[in-house]
Length: 117
Length: 113
Image 1 (spheres, rainbow over the protein chains, first blue to last red):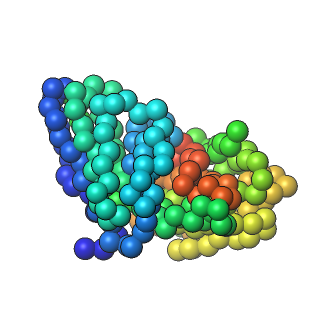
Image 2 (tube, one colour):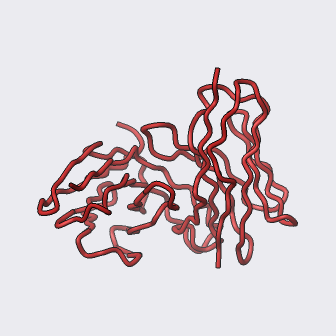
């Protein structure tokens, strides 16, 4: 496997279910991200982990719970979601270089298409 | 604050036509500028980038020039192919905080044979 992988690719869940999204990066990066992509809206940055520590949480509801057990893996745990949470959830990674030239090059996985019924 | 404005799509072209997708930005300091592409059913991929004024990023026949005087980073390709059908995103980061990419809304391109 190379790059950034995400599983599952598609997920349908009811509002009372609990599920988890998984992301794995094989690039040796030290920062990982969760984004939400909805139609007709800019990409929304949800969470950022750098060196396995959460460094940003952009006012995301608590029904989304991230976990980063090591620098290669990132999870998004989901519970009691709402239909408006239906979207494409993208994981990305980068080599965190804050304080230097700020290249911003992030590598994305293919996403998990989530549908909440 | 920082922001990115892209032309609204969808853009529909015939194969071998010339492509321009406009992107303008608002930013403090000296941002780095990017174009990402998302092919159907896939995640985003970096297409090209430029880190300082007058730099030209290029890849796969696409080009964009960092124009500080007009705060623009328009994407161009001289002859599009059906395989270029995708959504194109303009984005920026400011130096010192490469975690936060500021995104445009994306422009959908459909190329017909």
